[in-house]
Length: 485
Image 1 (cartoon, one colour):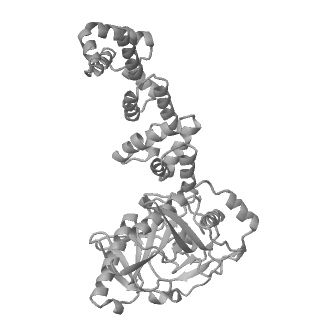
Image 2 (cartoon, rainbow, N blue to C red):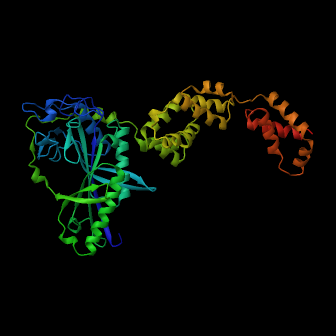
Image 3 (cartoon, helix red, strand yellow):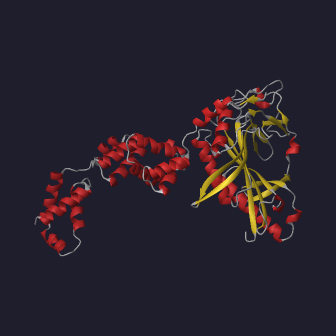
């Protein structure tokens, strides 16, 4: 990218999953593998059907705008975005366009990338209905109306991002916000997150604050994964630089392309459609309504601690490293699991160590989520307490954990079944130590001469107790008994 600046703007679409019904329909808002089960006549555009606004969806949208520091409107109304496509049978989408009526405008989001802070301006975030989903096959296509009418938040940034890495970090931060705030599961595997990416390049010597210096904007539509966003941006940057170098860039029109995952290229779809082509006008079936200050304040007070706040608490109050804190808060389910162990009395550091070094490793290896894990927070606390109380060793605890998960039994039941209760009785261990030392007087002399025979004594005690002797207590007693001789 030498000699060029990259300007990237995002249009992030995230379905609101935390409502019982769709945004203008009484149909269930829920993911289903079975097509066309969560539908009502209005979702299919039947004549004579009328929309009714879902108050919870508006609340979730307002909450998102507050988190982003946007301005909230005093009044809200919806508009029609007119276009024909098979996934929108009534030939228009109910959305929000006119400023400042969208749910929120002029906010910002600051996130971390490689230890540095990056702030991106938010142009607006607004509420709309999602379209149905299409699946394309060799000679035909199928349509699924389960998604039609699902409440959808569209977030539009200013072109403040400068690399694919920044774009992905922004999206990951926003996904975290949606999850922590209880707005959406934000699960891309369920199609709840999609992204349009706008990319252009310009001479690095020119002033990027002047839009006249910006290059031709290319929009890449409906990228369905963060990895796809990264790859699409990197390809498009290279494609545009190549056009600059061979002299064809200035002839390039503003356009919409799609990301092709098979060829790892962007493919031309159409010339860019502007707002005027959609013929926006006020939705006549939804009256303009006032957003009261009291309701706004209630929503504002309902905003929970987000990932960034939890991370600071974990570092400042619990003494976790930045790395461990970052790993734990990356997934809300993991963070919730961690906090539940703390409520049950676990040591913050011990619990964090188990999560980051053992449990997450198991989940990643087996491609599981923590909700799929048999080991509950209470079971983990019991395991931590057994190690702390000297009932089992740290090494034994890992074996117990694996057996708990595999055999789906309580930790204490596994300990009894394996017979691995740690021996921490002073007299029992001392009697064994004395016997071992009596059998190897020559090695005691070698130890005094500086030879490493101490580990041999520890090993013999462990062998005699089948590994159940408390290691630290064993070492202490061996040292005491040698000094007596």
